[in-house]
Image (cartoon, rainbow, N blue to C red; front, side, top):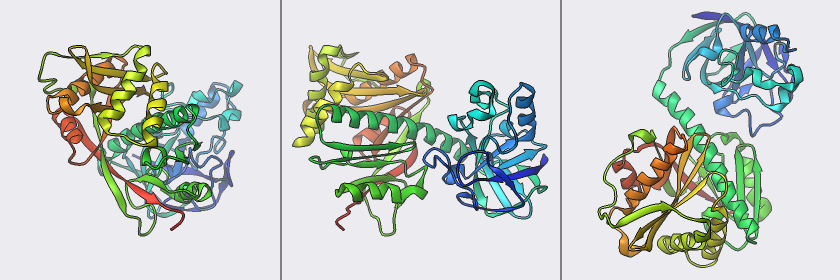
Length: 416
């Protein structure tokens, strides 16, 4: 399949992007092009935005005032139905440039002016699969000009492309859950500074020292904004931990490593609790204190973090997307676990088993129970994070979860 570049578009930020005669395309996109909301758009996985003129013409036929460049695409193309291309598909453009389709670009309010009554959902992949803008990574840098031939090539690694889409979903839900925990702590009176901007989120707690409340998220998608993450801790004057899949700055050393696991919930199986005397159920709202107490006791959380964790987690009981389960034996609680559901993803969140009940399959039973609940909530993916080689990691693997990504905590201390 072949097409051509119809128009090359850039802007100093915002829309419309205006046509230029040529542009160099690097790892972060077109030279001279910038994003108004760079924590939502841009970065190496969304370096270039593309839209087919065929899609533009269909949208125009519905009465919308869309034009090439008006919805922020960098390359307006002709001859290829871009939105039908599978993630990982490569586009060889001109003499040397090679792009790789990453995923669809979601509509945003910034492009409302190109649609009747501001209905930018007209180019959503969910409602109009042929008319969406598409993001692409830069595989080989090069110049692009109007008239350049575009040659469509099959994915070099279809599994890697699919994994990147999965990781984007996992990252988004993990950020939602973590920021919700921070805000619950703040509501409980914990002194914690929180900054959330698109796909970046940072927290710094005055009296707490653990990474749980002093953490920066978003580096995997936006490594180009590392300075913004570090600047937050510079302003706070306190150390923080950046979650990243590679050293965020020269010389950064990983303090601990963890693995993100994922599975199709329908495929999760394996041995559950060894003793039939163990029962698992969702808790009632008035059991929030019990659930939080078992969590901190089973996790051996001490000091100021103990009180903060209790107060934050109990406030999440009953809130949207949060499900809290308790494992009991003879009416006594022996373990707890959380499930957070959003965007059809089930995040297996905090879990703990009291020491005297360990080694009896309670953890696996809690994994199975949360997975069943995720299926009821129509989740298509279940995910969890565990330290490599830990009992939690072994339990997830035994239940059918696959390791999909490794990440680490990198401590940044503004005091040097």
